[in-house]
Image 1 (cartoon, rainbow, N blue to C red):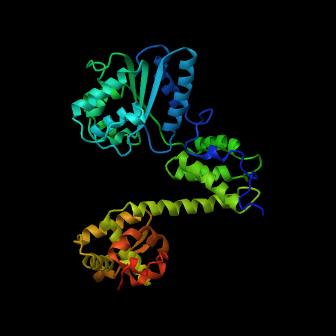
Image 2 (image 1 turned 60 degrees about the vertical axis):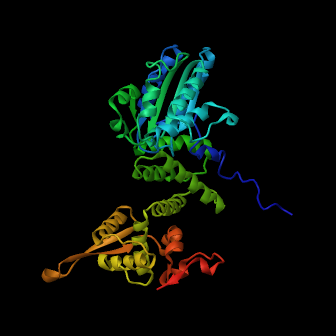
Image 3 (image 1 turned 135 degrees about the vertical axis):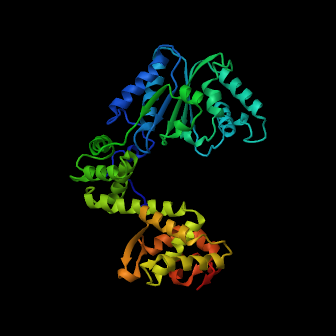
Length: 415
């Protein structure tokens, strides 16, 4: 019997090069930033104390890619010139306190069997353990803190950036590289921490369409066979990436999704139509993520508008949406927010492209009011709000859009 899954090399040579984690052999479109970054790292090879470096810019503008590229080259150079170098990578996502950050760093420096618990230690002990781990190293140590802005207090950063001056480390030359999507993060820091952390600052601006085209051309040459892409595919992907704030990750992901769509359809080329349909799917997924991240009462407001849409009663006035929202709050024993707050939610939904609003005029005596309608299909919204619907109950108007769970009692239907 012929296997269901068979090798397919019609379009792709190396699909993995279109993944976010891939580090290219050369960096394109970031010449000025790479040059400044390289100069900041040069002291390591000279055997000098490294500067602390603060890198900032929006998501997808090359911060992590350039960092990984240069640190790989730095490690090779250090080995060639017999320079002792240790690079410690730590992502700060999920770390809100200095205590958590210090413990995670200790565990990054230790073998798994010697990790310490995440709670239950006096702060003084935690930092004593941290200095001991660092002093067990030799030469230059570069600590790379990605998403550094997640750490909400200054204690950890103050301790790290002042460790040498305060006599806590004596066996290494410690340098810190902080990477942030939030350019205002450094402004929230204590003055002493800011001056130490930001010895060298490098800002990564959004890519323009031309730079995105260069990035995509580089990846496409490696990822696809010659002739696998129709004319206009890379330009269209670059244009969408520019519209998304100059985000190279989004542009590369779009190219990969378009390629996957073409491969699924057994097409001989990736076309601009594949790109357009892939973009629609990415936008739908982005909308799903946005809706799932809304607060409870924002979701209740969107749910209210969705039920009105399902009954053909939209566009709906703000007060009608508010009445339905209050019904849901009463049914689920939640304290409703004010009508003004719900109008604010509806305005936010339009900014997020989840809804469309229209201002209506009733003449000189009738005044003006707003009507709202969904800008996403009902099934998508219901899918995104499924957890809330399970808690609040399924309004009769949207029952047909609920997934088949095989458990009729999972959703409590009500009018």
